[in-house]
Image 1 (cartoon, rainbow, N blue to C red):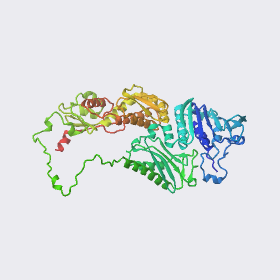
Image 2: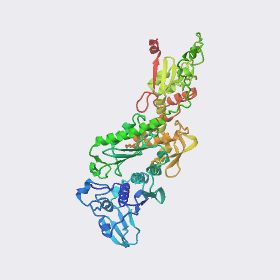
Image 3: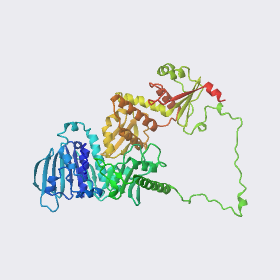
Image 4: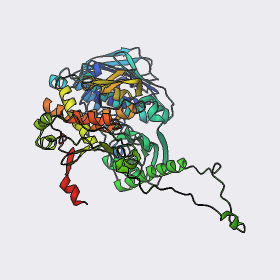
Length: 590
């Protein structure tokens, strides 16, 4: 009635099943030890209820479960496991040793399994609970073992599964070691916020708002991130129902809808939402991994989640409004004494009608834009070199730039300069993107990228899972010009960034969030295709995070570098970088 097929896809699948079994056994402390990202050993020790010798022998049989006693129990599931397939599937592809003892038994019992066959069994001395070791995963299925990813990637998946279970049970202590090194040591009986901090870092917990609401159909509690902490990418987003982690793109849209007036497009909030509802109104057995849930009425749950998150965000906005009027100027009450307030003289403004701003040295900065610049003639264009790059640039710069014209920036978005045939307008952001794309593509093809060192190296707490992602891509980041060093299991120190990126202190956290978002994007194909895609992503990131053009010298450097590119007219994605407004077009406007 409840068969679902194979569950062991990778070491993380084993970790998930063993941890969930330990929680269902009523454990107070769960210790997970992993070697070589689970290839060599996955060992889980718990102090739960343990098993009798008979149960220890039969638990490796298919469909043998102690968590259901009748078919009717399928509609009232409150435990993690219930199908009795996990241990059977694990024993089919690994060498397993189980030691277990119940509190009422004087001795424990040990069972050794190899390839689904019982190799030995005997009474042994054992503490209360269970100790299960899974060795040489996929030893008898070499094709599947061959397709496991690197240790960093596989351990990242283990951390993800560990995190999902540990978040649901702050009353249980959890420990995780990898190759003998402690990764997590989480105390029991913690608050949910402290558990989130222990798993994902202090920066995360400091930016959370508590949520709690109860309706007829469900009770929702947990935390959502403050709008200003929203980041690119989709990490740190968790739904749980009755203590079980699940994925739901549909409910994710409910959260995003609640945030739509609070965060810009393209960023995602963090959330940890726990739903408690009647188990008869949900079906947790619609996928083999049990990470999808079928609700009796999806639309009601959608509206409930949306309203709960929206309410918390509204309270946060109201709490920031300052209604304190202590420092406000006193406004007089105009009643019978109104006449004494009438004699108010208007300020006099002096005007020089003969002033002509176009006869002065350049345009006043304040008249153009607060962040712009004036001055510095855009000379130095090599018409021959630029003419070889593209037809447009050749036509544009085959004549010399008008010496008397002054270059300036407009709204920090454009550089405007002149040639004899009109005005040239360069999109600053797209010019930077073109420059960085060429630079990064060269770096990925073996050339050395230039890195600019940060004046004050800044530590960034990113969490264990993200730290593993950076470790996996350390060679790539180094080739692009990033200088990022490990500082513990969940923190890195940013010593340098690629030339063209902003190295300002205080911007490093946002930069690292963006870098992680780029690395998490899945892409495939040939190496050349991957290099182009990666160069384009980091070029867009660099163009967005770089400093504004604030001087004629910076503008000239940007123009010179742009026209040294293979294509100065368009970005790699085909967007136009510059345009020419001819004198004829200008004449038509006057």
